[in-house]
Length: 196
Image (cartoon, rainbow, N blue to C red; front, side, top):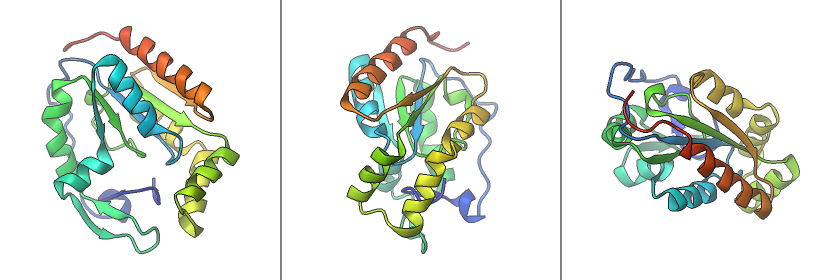
């Protein structure tokens, strides 16, 4: 999804994704949390990871810390990340399992890594206000609002992870935040753990 935070190279028309199709499955279940910037991914991920005793990995922050970013995108002003390096570095972490993986795009993570996917959504008024507070403007604001309205990330998650449970949760308020956290925690406890 363009214009959010860090742009994968595949969205710039460069690079090939590492397939990772035949590698090992995680030893315990992982959760992917995706959604348009401003939907509350970081807050939800931190709460879920804390309640379940899992590791929270914010992919954007991970890429920055590891130096897997390049130049800033001219249109959106976001650092471009090297997804091949990110995937290589994440592989042992994800295979160990017990990870809440957070990112605003999801179609480049190997399906075998993900045992549950969560798409956080937000009403357009609330989302617009949140993005304004982050100083999103112009094309960056328009792109993210359009992605939310057109359900781009929900559809991306459905197509990328057709065999795992997918939760689509609206995260407009603190009440939603508490309910969504508990829903994710509950659903996670029903997942099979370990290699299958």
